[in-house]
Length: 235
Ligand code: ATP
Image 1: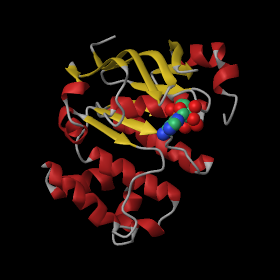
Image 2 (image 1 turned 30 degrees about the vertical axis):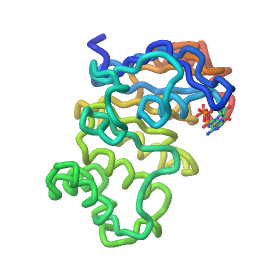
Image 3 (image 1 turned 90 degrees about the vertical axis):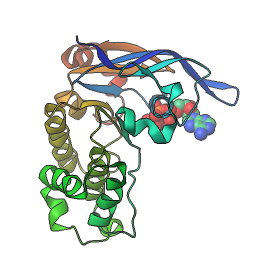
Image 4 (image 1 turned 60 degrees about the horizontal axis):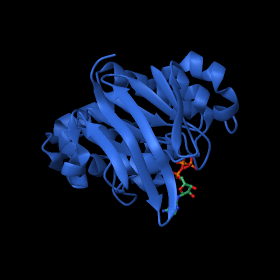
């Protein structure tokens, strides 16, 4: 394994007095796709909030490319290479596809490059570039949310429940693109309910339960040893 792009060490976090992360350890190797699986309420989304600086841990460390994220303001995380596609997507419904993408060029990436990247991964966005984002299908909106994240040329992309509310065929299509993004050198942490789909493109998998990572390993091994936990809901 190479030097990790992301290292989470003994992270604890709570909402009020209820502790929901109870000593999370997780490492994402550079250039790898890691699928983070586990039942509802395991703490996966809370962990992504801690990693992306939206929630303060009560203790523990998060290092991104060797930088302690506590030293970085959340709005500056893109500059150190982190981009998150949060659960439920994040597009401006009343702006067109193109306007949504062009807004991302503020980060210093030239506008044509932002559009080129988006349209090469998702030709459908090119066809629909003048359409209001809010009128597109869920899958198309997810493509746009991913393209907006890619605009900042991230070192680590966090995808939280990419498949939420989408038909299996479109989920497969999105994950094929995840694999292409990864092969361009971007490290990816994907949180997913559809364990089998995520495991097809993942290099490694980690399983969370009860606020801890209870297993890590290669996809086949995790599917074999943890199927009762990870296939409990949607497979
Ligand atoms: P899911 O797959 O259902 O999104 P998850 O593994 O992402 O689950 P979290 O959303 O991190 O889990 O939730 C972990 C626990 O923290 C749950 O018990 C949840 O009810 C609780 N929780 C999450 N967000 C909040 C909040 N804003 N205030 C209070 N409790 C919260």
